[in-house]
Structure formats: C-alpha cells, structure tokens
Amino acid sequence: MADGISSFWGPVTSTKECCERNYVYSSYVAEFYNTISNIPCIILALIGLVNALRQRFEKRFSVLHISNMTLAIGSMLYHSTLQRVQQQGDETPMVWEVLLYLYILYSPDWHYATTMPTFLFLYGGLFAILHSVFHFGLGFKLHYVALCLLCIPRMYKYYIYTDDRAAKRLAKLYLLTLILGSLCGILDRVFCNHVSSWPLNPEGHALWHAFMGFNSYYANTFLMFCRAQQRGWNPKVASMMGILPYVKIEKPKAQ
Image 1 (cartoon, rainbow, N blue to C red):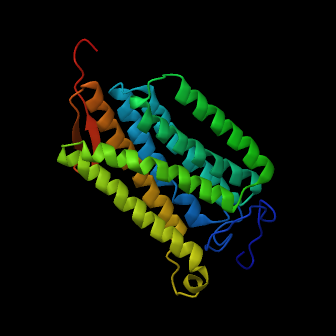
Image 2 (tube, rainbow, N blue to C red):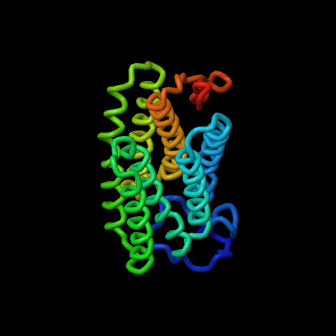
C-alpha cells in the first residue's frame, strides 16, 4: 500500500496479488493499472456483440461476447478490491468462458445435440460450488490451463481447413496475442522482485489483460468466420476503419 493512502475495502483477503503496488492512486482502487486494463476487453466484446446481433449470428456468439464482457467486469472488481469474494467472481467466469469455447469448437461434430451443453453446464456449476468451498489455488491454474489446451487442437483444425488468407491471419493474431500476453503475465508473476526495482514497472499483468482482450476478439471473430462457412453464409473478413477486423456474411434468402 502506498504511504498515506488507506484502503476503502479493508485488508486484502484474496490469495494472490500481482506485482503492482496497492492503492497508489486511490483508496477505492487497489491495483489501478490491472483494473483499467480490462476496459479494452469490454469495448472489443461490445463491438463483437453488436456485429453478431446485427448480422443475426447464432445466439452462441452473442453469449460468448457477453461472457467476455462479464469476465472483464469481474476482473475489474477483483483488482480494484483484492477481496476473496471478488476473486471468485474473476476466476469462476474464466472457467465458464473456456467451457463455452469448447462447446462452440466441438459442437458442430457432436451427434447428440443436448448431451454436450448439458454436461458442460453441470460441469461449470459443479466447479463453481467446489471452488467456492475449497478455494483452489494451484489446482485452479492447472485446471484452467488444461481446459485451454483442449481448445488448441480444434482451433488448429479450423485453421488448416480454412483457405481464406484474411481468416488465417485472424488465427495467427489469436496465437500471437496469446503468446505475448502469457509472456507478460509470466514476467509479472515470476520476476516481480526484479521488476519492482526498475525505475518504471511495465505492469505485466495489466498488459496480459490488454493482450487477452484482443486475443478473445480475434478468437471470436475467427470462430464466427468458420461457423459462417459451415452454414454456407459466404463470410468475408472486412475491417472497421481499416483497423479492426470483423466478419461480414451474406445469408441465402431462404435463411
């Protein structure tokens, strides 16, 4: 805690803290940069949601973008308070979001329509209950990484079966932001003692938030393109103001 600034939220009760100093700028925000760095994720998810609704994509993609926003808001609440309850509100949606990605990735080839969503829903609910009771630490991290690794083979399959160069570029941007974000997160976690002695803290965890906001957007956009191809909607990757890519579709009149 910075000298002369007291905490509005009381003592830290969360089981993990990042390398950023607490309550430097305000008694209401514990980790300032780790809090505001979630804003890009919210904005990008909102842009994706508007595009999904405007072009009438399947509801799964609207839910996915809303999930990204919910996760970012939960992360903001956690990093601004460093309380155990808010930590649960950050970590549990992380697992729920990956379960949603697993559904979107694997459901097109799943022959039993209700089995997968029912199983994933029950799995997510059970995890939330167990995590709130046992407060998994390292177990949570290993579990989350394992779920993320399950997504990668399917993403790679979509990549190799996609001929569109712009869509492949989305997949490459997804991988690039994932690698850069992970490196920033590792820097903040493992080398905190060294980073803290630098004249300027690079705020690796805040950079992780920013990179993962773009990572989620690129992943969502790539999956929307692949799903539109499966549905025969003639998708194309366009750009918003020449910068931000999005998927533009042409549905047959019968649809």
